[in-house]
Image (cartoon, rainbow, N blue to C red; front, side, top):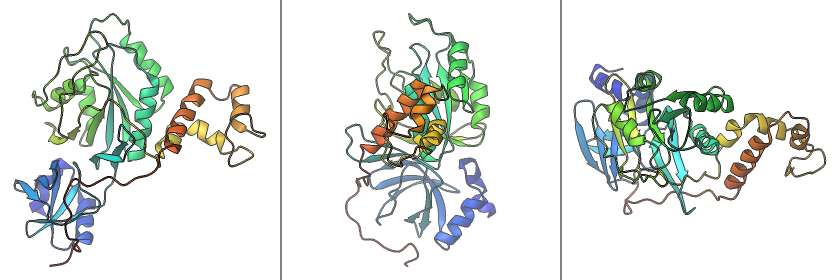
Length: 337
């Protein structure tokens, strides 16, 4: 890797990315997308931060976290992604790219309300479909609320329901769990998902070490907060790692081709694959392996029902291509000069 690009290592640049750049566009300069505003990209380059106006139609469309190839000051290509976090729009019309080239997704759940396993299951499916590792972050461990949630018991229950997934109990107010969270992040790129008022902004500020995100008031009636983050942005974390902050997402719809559901419910999916008929609906059809496993206790009823719901949601969604916010531009090959 060129010494001139060493300054990009904290942002996630490595020899594999260098090889990808060399084989994608000869003689180009790499930059990572910090912010994306329509036809403008804010890029972190080896020796500077620069705003680049898009003059070519890039496919795929750039998003925060992408690595961009620049040639003569022009963005000419998006380097092939290692992962992409996406969601179905709240009204089911199209998909939205949330963050690219992420390693972990922090699933933030507030302990000032009951921890909903269905929300964690959904977040896990979305994370794994993206190609990222889910990490559950339980916040507000020290907050006094009317809901009696024991932090350690809640963490143990999540671990039991989702074996193999890291679960961290935190309290930003008391500094509990923040160092452990930093350790798990390491030098990876992470982003956050969680319902409004769960404490995402507080976690972001604690990790960055500054109040970069304004924290809105949380209504006592339903523990909902105002959506105070409005722009997706990439931050370099002190001590290592990268965080992509995303706007508050009240509803997350699964995309049609979400393979993460099968991975999240691998036990159920493995049993379902042994049904006598490939089109088995698992509703009493002859030779249904799922029904048999439910009857003998091999599978948990609640887990199967959760699997049914998410499978039905993905089946009901038509794959779509996100709309571009940029005006039509002429296409050109990356190496055309």
